Length: 313
Image (cartoon, rainbow, N blue to C red; front, side, top):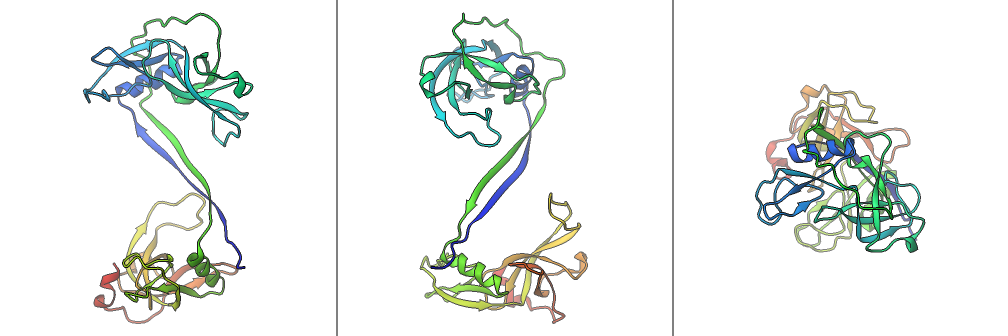
C-alpha cells in the first residue's frame, strides 16, 4: 500500500471591520457591563441587536437596555473545548433569552456537567475582569437562582465608543490528498512534476485533480511535464507576509509548464521584479531537502510567443 499522506494546515488572518451606531453601542455597552438590544417597529427587542429589521428590512436604531439575567432556550454540551473558546473545561453552548429580550444570545454556560443543564434554567452573565468592547466581555453565563435583574434604562450613549473591531479568524484542519495528488507529491520528492491526461479532451492537468474539470471524466494516465515553463501572468507582492522569509517586492506568477494545459503558480527569482514579463521562460530551482521548487528563474531562452500560451492565462 502506498504511504497515506497527511498534513496539518492552519489558515489564519485578522478580520477588521468598522461598526455602525447599533453595533458600536452594543459592544461599548458590554465594556461597561450594559447589555443593549434594539426595538423593532412592532415592539420586539432583538439581542444581539441588528441594524435592519429581519422581517420588514426597515432600519432600526431604537436602543433599549435588557437585563443581564435570562433563561436558557436550548443548549448543547461541549465535551472537548477547542483553542480560543470561552472556557477551557467542558461547558455548554446555550441560547439565552435575556430578560426583556425577544430573541436569544449564543454564548457559553459554565456548568459542572450536562446533567446540570436544562432548557428553562435561569442564568446570568459572568463579566470578564478586563473588558475591551467585544463579545468576549461576557466571559460566560453561570447558573442563577436569584431574582430577575432590572435594567437601569441606559440610553446607549457612551464616552469613547468602540468604532471598530479586529476578529482573528483561524481554521485548523488536516489535509489528506487523494490518489492523484499523492502521486504528484511523491513525484515532487524525486524532483519530477507529474500531471494527468484526460482520456477525452487529452488535456494534461498539473497539479492533477483525479478528474478532468472540462469533461468530468476520471483521469489516470500520468504525464511528466516541464520542468521548464512560461510565465503567463504575474503580480508584484509589496506586503511582507507573516512567517515568510522573502523580502519584498517579489513576483508571484502563473507558470504554464511545457506539456501542461493548466498553469500552476510559483515565485519568480533570479531576476529583478520589474523585469519579469509575460512570456518569460523559466525553470524550477530546488532547495536542499525540499519537496517542491523554491522558486523559478529565467532560463535565458527567448520569450515565448503570446499565441503559444494565450489559452492558459
